[in-house]
Image (cartoon, rainbow, N blue to C red):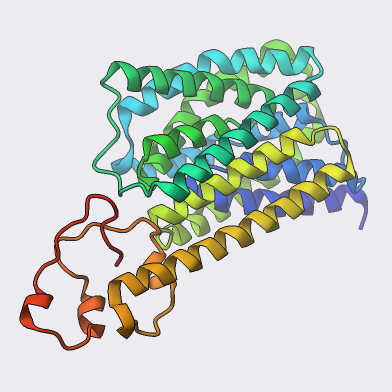
Amino acid sequence: MDSHVKQLVAIAFINSLGTVAGAITGFGSNVIFQIGWYTISLLGWGNGSMKQSDLILTLTSAPPNLIQSYHLWAHVNGQLALLLGLARVVSEVVGVAILFKSDNTRLQRALGGFLLVVFLWQALVERKIRQHPPEGRYSVCTRHRCAAVCASGLFSGLFGGLFAAPGPPLMVFVLVANIDKDEWRGTNSVINCMTFVSRILSFLWLDPDKLESGGIWLPCVIVMVTSIGALLLGNILATRVSQATFRDLLLVFLFCGGLSLITAGMGDFSVVIVAVGMVAIGVLTFAFRRSESADCMRKEFGNACPRQPLTDCAEAGLCLENETRPPLAREFSPAAPEADQAPLMKSEAVGYCC
């Protein structure tokens, strides 16, 4: 098998993995693709050109995002999509121009360091303050929220133009704003459709010869075909992902994105660090959730805690506020006076788990 065939097989794999992640959370697809693209170059199967990977992701972004927009249209937040989309369109052209005219290794590292600081801050916030489930759609009709949305969109556009990965600033925004996962998945797909045209026009303006390169179209076809198949799988898996798992995945992607940027230009060392970091953060997140689950089950059932899978309680991670004790709790509750079986009061601080 020659290196060109190996490159195409590797592209199909990393794009499928990224698209599944993107379908589940609305994030991660481009970050995963860029990390994989860089790994392919280290294996000697490609040139590792960021311009080329940026162009491939741009040319193939429309079909899967159109499908996802149609699939999740009922969840789309139109105001949020319009405001973020317009802000991204403005700054994305600037980002593409910087990509074509300057060496951005130092900029990548600086932004990577910033993302890691934001990750640490948000992880501490998540550990100390549990977010309640989102209440309705996110409204942008206040001065502060409108400013936050515009700033997030501008920074996202710069990231999208520079690295074809507009997600990190939006991850921070979604975590802080506590937006529902399905609302974000649908809204983000609409935003990507809006920015598709501006990105194509930017490439035509800055490097029209690149679009005429014969070597770009076969990878584009591979990416487009695998994207549609992986999108269907991701949407099936998304129904099994809770709001808290969604937030955990955003933190993982934020960490991996920062790590990949801060190690830019370090060759093999960069790939090793990112791979080890992904495994480590995944294990730590899983361990934290199991520990939190055990605490939650003890609070719910006391000494009569049933031997249920721990994920039954903390799958959401966020304690869901219900007016009455969940059916599972009633089923396994020890015999108690009738007063104890009365509806529980909601806790403003934590609520309780189902």
